[in-house]
Length: 141
Picture 1 (cartoon, one colour):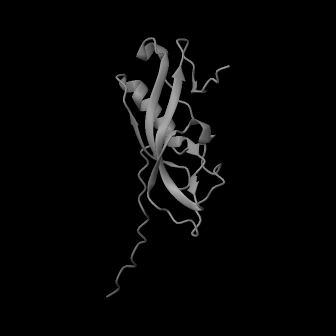
Picture 2 (tube, rainbow, N blue to C red; picture 1 turned 90 degrees about the vertical axis):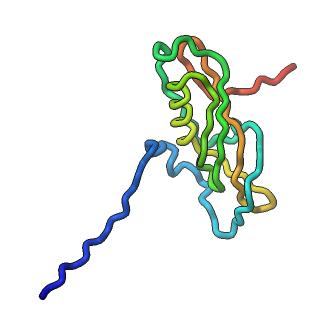
Picture 3 (cartoon, rainbow, N blue to C red; picture 1 turned 45 degrees about the vertical axis):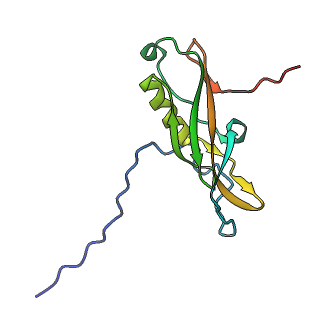
């Protein structure tokens, strides 16, 4: 009796979010000598963006959206986003921000030569004409 050959089980991949156009742009690949040691809280992350993906949304679908929206994010030791939370009442806008934030890449946080996960905020600025950009802090004087 001949036993059938086992078929290779190919790993299944489940993609919840589209692959980021930022893939491969992060020159900070995780290195074994970096010792990941917990998570640090860093405040606003906008200045550490290496590859920026902006939310795509329809102004007509959401009404007149303008102002600043904050997203709480957790980034890993290589600058990839692991978690996103948006506290906003507009569900379609919230989904667009989560999708964009997950694809954005950041400069990793190094502390005394060790890579760390970092928790912080991304701030998006929406204008009434349908434009969106990362919020840029204005210097006074």
